[in-house]
Length: 279
Image (cartoon, one colour):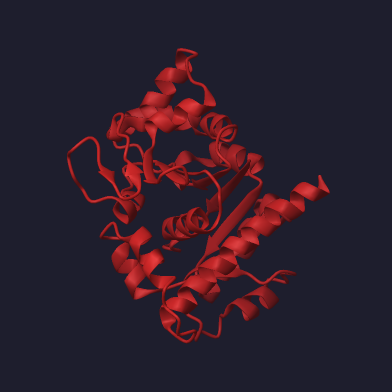
């Protein structure tokens, strides 16, 4: 049972949330893991758009199982109420999530209420992650800068692996160099660097960035892919991954995209296992 937190400095678009969606979907399809994605943002519909059409009905028994909907707009609020009443067992968290793949992948959606309520409830995310980690095999945390430094530090410290998402340009890379001097945890063995919206034809490719940052392990990347970008807006991400698995041309750009997501998946799982053995 492990916590993987996806971090970025929040100052630029690095494709962090879409990386969570891609890697989480691939892990759920390829591994026999029970995975929970936790969105810590405020009124962020990025993950919602990846997996669900915007409908009003409360339950949808489709191909991938029932989408439970105990207050879709306030799943996090329901968890906190149960916590405050001492009625929340780890397995109860599933009652406040939405199902993507039955018994494989669920999402605790971002808070959709008002800003003042979010300021109060965001303090509970660290504890919720700890409780959920007792039930799910993998927790993937989409860490939002709106949580503030103190809460961010708590979550990073309890994470088994941190995926640090940066942009594919020199200013972004240099900014990360400065940040990790201020946050030593980003220099630790449990941090993996990921390039979002990756273009393999840039001179800032994974090998050169790894060399520039003196990284022993090559950084991972989630390439920009047109079909994936479209699917992330049309609730078609899961279907897209199943379709991509059927493509046999190794030079197809969609196969290349899928292979990079697989490499990211493999690197994260390996890092979790490697660090666990060293403890």
